[in-house]
Image 1: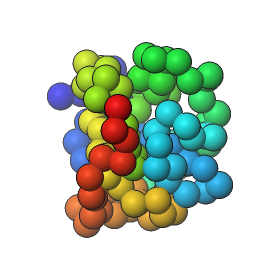
Image 2: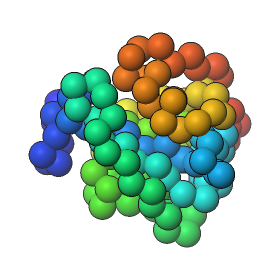
Image 3: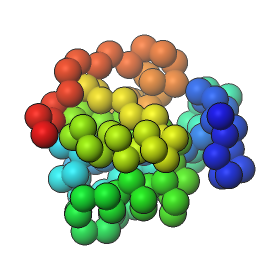
Image 4: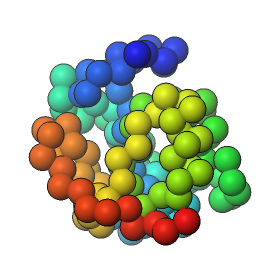
Length: 125
């Protein structure tokens, strides 16, 4: 399934992957991050990176911003509330939760390689 982004929505082939970050590492709480690292991937490899400051956190704002403005296909997060996950699903954006708070680029590389180890959703709302 592809969105009108100019990217193929298949793992690693022309897609954008967003990671909420705080001080360069994956932020455990999605809605509380300082910025997003948005990686562009092709052929299973990272080919570009953008750091973007999100708009003020309000329910429904981040799914719209990441989906429509940033054209993201996948989000890798430590934790995310159920409602936010539903809003991303409605925009055909895949959500991966339970990712460890490590270097954002390493998390994306591991996900692209199929080796990202995830635990439980770190968000309880």
